Length: 317
Image (tube, rainbow, N blue to C red; front, side, top):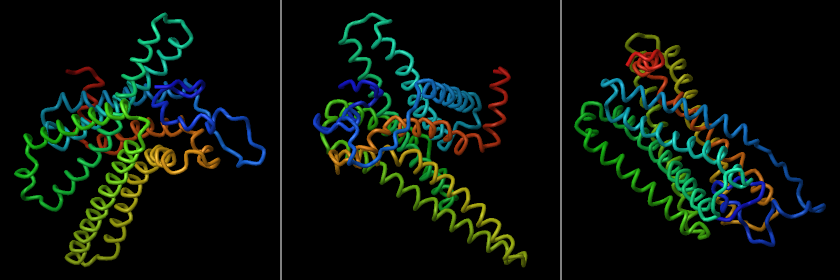
């Protein structure tokens, strides 16, 4: 993929607009819009990647260690951690190695550098797709556990969970390979944006429905105890807060990146869109932040996993 000078090479093609309208190479336009460009130092990228790397390795290690966590729900969480782990590995690899290669500190052929860049792009694109899919799988799993509790273990079996996991990984790899091959085709970008919108809609519908059922259940308990108002309001506010955090983090961390993809298709030459293109590194940093937050939302809230995590940290294998 083409290099972009001061821009990070990671998914660099997403920052490529027609040569005559590259927003980050033109001189400032005195009559154009004032652009706010947020600079993300390589040190910050590296720090975020290392924090996410350690955090998600701990999640995978805890689930692998405790046999009580060998269930479909935790396997989905483990795969989400692996996806976030790949985001972190690709970020650390790029931040640490690519500048050395480009500066000539590590002598190698240009073809090798290009291949390494492609491998990193495959890693980051595949991990993004798999992360989105596993977030959706976790939402569906929780939905079934609430609305079909008596049939859950017959519906969500380990063989079915493994087939879903395998399908997601295969689809993610194929998607990343297609992206590398046809990165300059708008259809590919639209498919990625469509995946994000589909996962956002799926999660919103399922979690809102789950919250409504939980509030309905709380009202039923309150009527039995003749304390309807306090219980219902307290539970509803807590549930709404949790739902806002869950969907808000997902949208804030992933939304800007997919907005960037959408604008490449819709207005690649518009000056205002060019201002947004300049913050591509910020959008990547937000995705890495999502890899840090995911374990806090989906994994570390489990008491069983936290207990196992303490054992892992104490090296009591």
